[in-house]
Length: 64
Image (cartoon, rainbow, N blue to C red; front, top):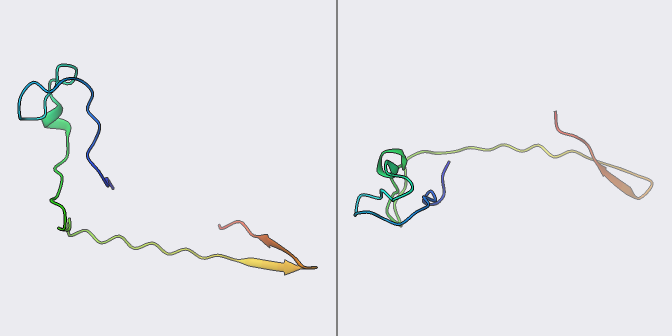
């Protein structure tokens, strides 16, 4: 998942996004959605945290 435009080094050659160092930058750069719009892809993340407290010392257990 990309949250911002990809860095392309070099000096822009024209309005396409190609640069002097990356002449095919316009072909390898993914489209960027306009601010305030969504890409229509939902991402769900589930995190399970376990904690064991013993003798006033808490230890986080590894997640398998």
